[in-house]
Image 1 (spheres, one colour):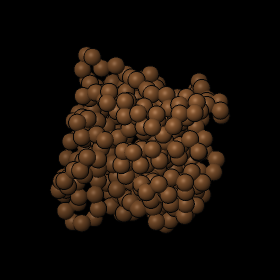
Image 2 (cartoon, one colour):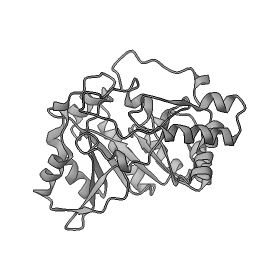
Image 3 (tube, helix red, strand yellow):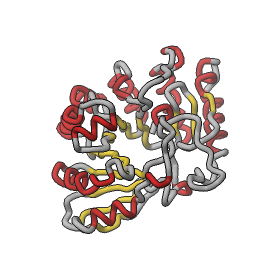
Length: 296
């Protein structure tokens, strides 16, 4: 998130629960989607979020959420009762001072309490999303591995991608997933787990104490296996996190389009899905939106 200069959407620009549910239903019924993830920004800032979860959970797809965990301690049980299956918590440091420097808020304890609440609520597995940045927090990989093993959490290490709001990304800041896995394997021996289309490659601890994941978006792109699409809060459909084109579903939803038209728009956008994002190549073009505006 940018430190300042946030441009907030007008409330009328944001999709209603009815509109979100309708798009999700078309995706499930017409295209066989088996999972729906609520992301952000920060999804728990949306009023009455359990009501949306409850509606989505009736569609026949697993409903999960990615959150910064700041209010998870208060919301976890209500979300689980509404039908949320599992949760990913974004957390980039286990050191209070460093956490405050990265997030701008001294709230590490609050997030840790939220993680505990998610486990208690049965949101399993609880996964931690950790973006390692060279010279910032790359010395914490083993700390996170130990924390995950101790508390029964799956830690997912994500390579730093050029989607930061500050536009400060540089290839030299990327910590390759292979480097992270090797560092952990040297202390806690690992073995690879077969990958089935998910963004994260998995390794299990040989002593049976859980797993870690690594998302090598930069050094080992998995674009050919990716089956994810996204819709922003204001209803812009994207076939890739790095897409340069969006399809406006909100105008269709509010203009009286039927489900056939919605399905055709979604299929048309997916048909334009490219070979890959080209990070690190001279022809790479950074998207106009940052991660917090797209929804990770």
